[in-house]
Image (cartoon, rainbow, N blue to C red; front, side, top):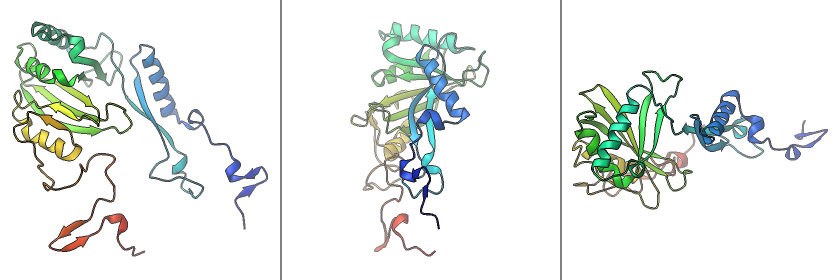
Length: 270
């Protein structure tokens, strides 16, 4: 019977592989692209390196999941030419914002084109990272200018990046121009400690319920919303269940006096 040791020493003496030693080909490509993006290129930006999967860790790991190392890559800032109609749209938006007294560099934190083939193709998507204090002005410009005319908002969704310090919560808006047959994405990032974003219902009234849902599930507070309240969870529900720091086992739920415990605390039948 093996005691888990080898001629070279115990298992605990084995050196822990560094990320560069265990990254697969795709992961190495992401890291390499991120380094190029940092030097002014158009590659992805690695925001985190995850070690281990599914909570497996320690010497009892027989699955191998605890040894996985995976970089988390996000599209990096694009450089001109963006391709297709993207350059024209960005230029028009900058002009319209300037006429309203808003500097483009103050309103738009970065322009992202994803994916970024060379040359760009019709599948690429244009995303504008918007400073929250200028969100309503950007939406109004995109909706009202005749050369932009993004008159339809498909809704608002939330994303939670716990390790993106100072930018943990993201509100994402998908806009469509029926007039020109185009789509654009807006993204606003706010800190977990100050999760406030201006409501866009004054520009896109149909975002009303979408903002309520995003508040309900992620805790993003939409200032000046006409009636910000939970829309799917009960009014007295604790927390926001689509955040990544929400307990996976859930919380006890009461049904007419009976209590159903979280899945991870229920009786085991195997």
